[in-house]
Amino acid sequence: MRLGTQFKHQYNCHQDFDLIRGETHCTVLWQQQVLASIPFAHTLSKTMDGPCWIVASGPSLAEADLHKIATFPTISLNCAIKKFVDHGLTPTHTIIVDHRVFERQWECVTAAIQSGANCFFSFEGLSIIAERAPTLLQQGNIYLIESATRKYGVARWSIKQCLQQFQQDPEIALATDLLPYCRAIGFSHNLQKGVFAGKTVATWAVQLAFGLGYRAIYIVGMDLGGTGKAHFYADKNNPAPDFLRYYEPHIRGCFELAREASDKKGVKLYNLSLKSALPAQIIPKITFAEALQQIEDQTSSLK
Image (tube, rainbow, N blue to C red):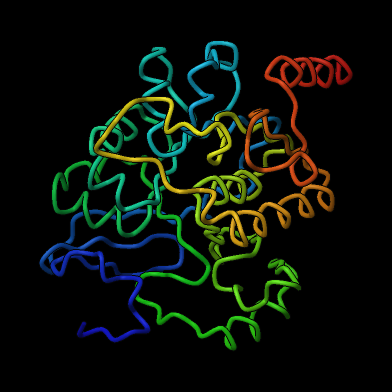
């Protein structure tokens, strides 16, 4: 309350938590004592290449055999880490940005960190880790990823300010028919500037994959309520979000911009959930087997 409405995005953080921003790292403090130095996500920009599999936690993930993609880079979203653990596998990256996962699914957070994967967390997540298990922040595999319009220690811009900044920025794409939503709907080509939330972690992950440098992105388990079921795992403590409620305009708008970015940059982008609520006209749908064959064909053509 003391911070004012421009810092409303920090209200979920513990009052003893603080971050000091640097250019490449932020310093995490608890009760004004230094806990750790955490690099920003952009320090890994353009360090990756080739194909990448984004693994979401929708019900269709239950049918996916992750052993078939064990040799490829992967990004685990939220509690999809459970599937990796069950298969005895380790993702290349994990991303958890919903504070409710940190609050209600703590085991997913610890499993992600202990897997050794690059863990991309929100500042709200860092606050909860600092409160519950501060030594985890010193593991060396945690990165801070932020929304373009909700950064810790930075007053949130008004819609007018966002339009003034983003419409002149070649690294930021906005939906011309959704400009009043420019604080949440967009596409960022620069991780240093943050990403657009779009009401689902999958939109964060796609922008992250672009920013890291991957050239082909295959999304598994992104059903967005299309199957009528909850997560691939049964858990009454963490009910599935109402994706259909947020489909218009947030999810649709962000993925339309992702498709435009894909076409513009020559990055392949596919949705492997055939029953996903996101139509194929926005993100093309292919099967798991077709994705594997596509990668094999691409690899063979390079030999």
